[in-house]
Length: 149
Image 1: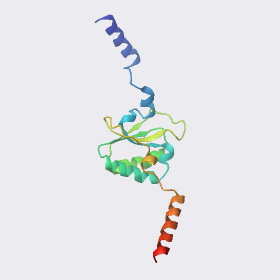
Image 2: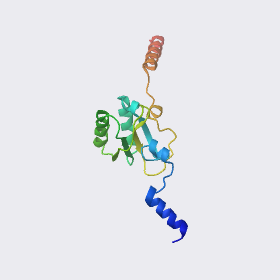
Image 3: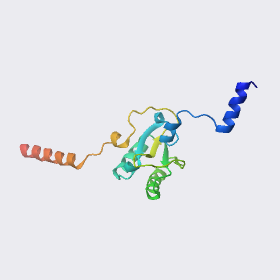
Image 4: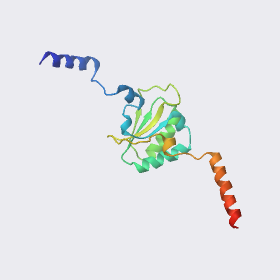
């Protein structure tokens, strides 16, 4: 064994094998951004409408794997675990993470290979109509009906 190979072996034994983009892996619950179909922050997980959007994504990507942040509240974690188990999706609870604020990722739908999905944020991928938009649509339809009745 050469001196360089011996040093690499000792370093790997002492510090562990080197990681590629450790900051990105920490942010994305141990995986890379390029492997994500869908992401949900802790704040987005609290929104009930996003549960339906998660189901849409799960049905669209049946070979996906779910990563759940182990640092989120137990009640929130249980709510999404029941959805995932009901759909018989494989999941992993990532326990070596810390939540500093509501913008940290709480749930990711991922693949085992790179897919390079352009938009992974659930609220951008499945926009929720606000009450203002719904009210505007009702006014437009009522005006439309008044014109042709």
